[in-house]
Image (cartoon, rainbow, N blue to C red; front, top):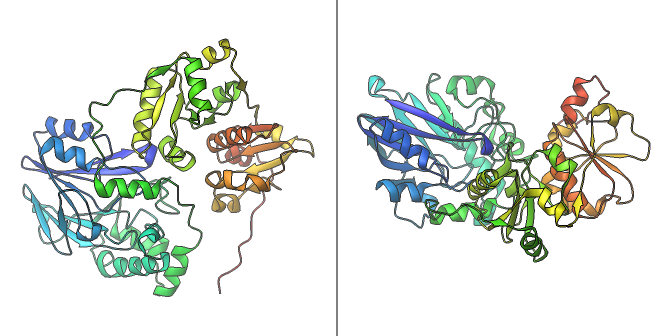
Length: 464
């Protein structure tokens, strides 16, 4: 038996291929499916099934394209309401991939239709060797319960369903069963995911806070508290996945646009995304652009910050960078890429078009700032509470634009996050909104703490 994990850092997303005796199943595929086809071909495997553990909100799945290109059958939970040809599975249903048995468990909690997949290795046929848990059970966390509100499920109802799922379906499994989730640290499908991408039922039973002894009411309170903002693209991606996204194969790369054409499109309402490193963005960038560095969790942050109903213009180091950005945007359903700036910022400047800059401070410069400077921490509330620059105001990046009216535009702002990635995006948003004096703190709070500079914490009231 073969079980292979494909991990996509940009989305903190894991997909899987299970193979045996010339047959294979792919579980939770990403939008671009060529890697599964190549992997299967190299090993002489025919992909018979494409399995979705649930209708994903944080990325667009490639299940439809993979099925079209292989003839595979798509398998989803029967409660999904899928609008494409599929096999709907319920509790206890089984499939065979070669000599491997796959048994489905209905596991509502993150979504109503969620399923987990027990994998029975023929060498150990009596007990499952693995469980693919989708967004139900992560390493160190469980799936958030607040994404099904649009279809009538409250977060409290879903959290109660999650409690029953964990205690009735997953915790009874033997300690040695390998746990393979659909996400790791950085995903917005949970609150405190581990960087580890696999675990065991026994380890999670011992160490996962959500699996510690507590009654249903306490679990519901814990799971529904302090969930991160739901990114604006999540509902769109759920519906794309319910219908099946169109294939990416054969699509053209984004077209180069001369500065005048680029400026005209921007003036017409297109949003400008600069995908270069924050240092390059700081030196000089197209006025009004927002910086989302291609080398980080680019797709997820673009999904959180960009309007899916507007065209997108890219500023990249080169055509290859623009093509990569367009692919990664498609992974979260952002497909309205109008083109990229031909010749980059240098061509824009040479055309006499307006540029902006963001000064870059190190943490020592931040520590020596004058009294007129305010500090804006754009990390998530839990990060800020753990340790922050004394006096910093916390406004998370994904809520920044809605909170701008609460910020004084007349004072200078030093913007900080964990390492400088999110703060660079925030600086672009502030400049676009008319803030005149903005600096980005390189190295972020991590560098501040490493330098031994004083930190503050937020004391949380004890539950009771």
